[in-house]
Image 1 (cartoon, rainbow, N blue to C red):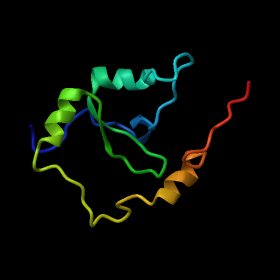
Image 2: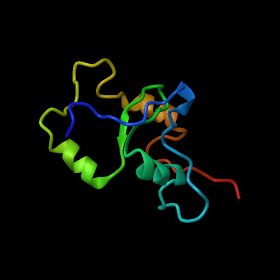
Image 3: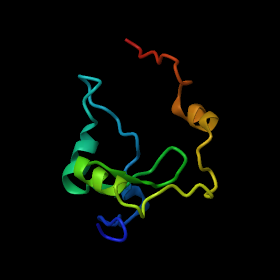
Length: 105
């Protein structure tokens, strides 16, 4: 495994996809179409979360196994905002955890 994650470098901030991605109508368990596209063209890629951070999204199983088995990979527990405050995540998710979301008919 390389020393750093590499992948296509976005030319503009708008090129970084938002995550989570919208799902297509149909089966709610199907992955979003944009996620399938990322799996095919850019397995490790940056995504933008609700709070503006841009973590790496690793979409392929083999890449995930390699990443998790690499002793150089870890979580920076001294980083501001780590671990994320669950209250902030809930406030920005549109619904409290465990609460049903009603979809208009």
